[in-house]
Length: 217
Image (cartoon, rainbow, N blue to C red; front, side, top):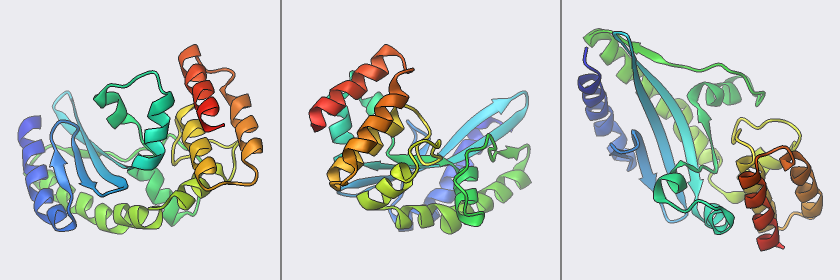
């Protein structure tokens, strides 16, 4: 099957269901997006083709405007695509499933992809993606839709890789902003801990973090 045809069929079928929950498809980013005043909710579907096989890799993302506006004041990059790529929370659907079903946030390299070779695979994948949306995606969005929950997910154990924002130094930046916004009493400890982990980052990232620290202080 052609990738473009499969993509079109899946988006059309899912779009009818997700529209009821105010999620609109963005063809530019391959994402279902719901925008609210303070948060952007994203169910992302990454389509790829290897040989004659089509794969879909779903992921979940959340963008908190109040947090990210502060981040971009310190970040060196300002273009819209970069800003869209930055997330407050999120990961592949496999990590989100493990978070809920196994009650673990330990990072693994496991991913979940859907293989499509024919029309039957397409219909089965649509149903699976829909079920994931209702069982895990909406649950993640509903559980962590405030800044206090972001702080809990990112700042509970600073020395452990967080599945909820695994990229350094972005996790450090988002975690530090969150701690400042909710006025954590141990903010200085959080700042010094993240600062020590940023040392090995490339210059651009270290500079972003340094500018952020000055901005927050």
